[in-house]
Amino acid sequence: MVGASISTRTMPTNPLQLSPFASQEARESGWLIGAFLSSSAYGVVLALFVLNFYLLLQRARSSSPKHRTRRDFSVMVLLAFITVEFISATLSMASHVEKSRLAFVVHRDDYPGGPAAYQNETLHEPMSTLGLALLLVINWSSDGLLLWRCFAFYKSASFPGSRLIFFIPCIMYILSIGCGVAINVFFRRQAPFLNPVVIVYGSLSVGLNVLLTLMIIIRLVILRRSIMKALDGTEHFGSLSQYTSVIAMLVESASIFVVAVLLFIIPLGLQSVVAIAPMIMLNMVQVISSFMIIYRVAQGTTKLDAHDDMSRVIGQDVENTGVVSKGKVSVIRFARPPEEGSGCDAEVEVDEKGIKRPRDSVSCRRSSEEIMDSEREKEKDVSSSGLPRP
Image (tube, rainbow, N blue to C red; front, side, top):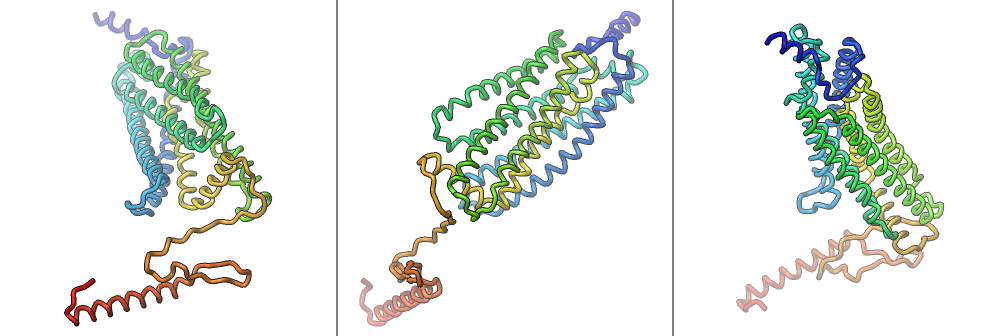
């Protein structure tokens, strides 16, 4: 019975269907390199999480609860998102550390085939399926965030079919969720056809990220051109290099994730052990890719609110009306409407050019105080006379 059990264990189930001709050293090196790179990437995740949380928390505290705006709601959503992503990345890192400890310390000598065989043959156990489930949660939430931001960019679009263009991304997102659930089930049951499903899932994720990134970039380019036409060479808002910076950031963030996934699915399709290291660090790469975008968004919400709002308004007006304003564009600040009986309703001043301007706030306050004093004196006179108040 002992010999039979050993013989069955020496024949690995190999759920990922990697090449059986790879040496044991190559397999163990792949697991160790993946664990090292994943640990290094977790340090980047921790740093970005602290920065994002601090910047977004500053934004959330800057506005009172009575005057919450849609942007404040978005900030709260981003705070919840980065918290969930960071907790998932931490649990994923803990599962990798525990799995490596079991493989390279506890079962290094007593498991047939060594640590690499232990790692590969126990992918269906709870510790490994936890890491897989966290990978799926991180991937789905990151893709969902990108899809949500793409919706926000196209919300003010008025061209025909502006809503229908999201049909393909939504279908791809739903298929990605379905493939992820299937992968989780196949991992538990050690299905022999796991590799094709994993490759399809990786291809869907890459395609969705590339498609949504291109859609956002195209939208930004269109808005940039509309604003340039509306400004007509004016320098009131400086250069529009911010749009170029945002586009570069989106390309950079998407490239990190796309390259990592391709480094995994291509060797996996070739049944090469090179796929082991990228597979282990996919969680952290996905989180870093999302946190990079959120970091730039958090910086923008604290420094560039006025510029972003004005750009959005001008771009929306140009799209909706089809009219391009000529000449200089200036920021219009609307003052708070005067209260009734303040004495400043019709008080205006005319400057040298004949332009009417509101009366000075000091004189307005003075006139308001005079009116209030006169009202108090009237009340005193009425009370002293013993007559009922009107």
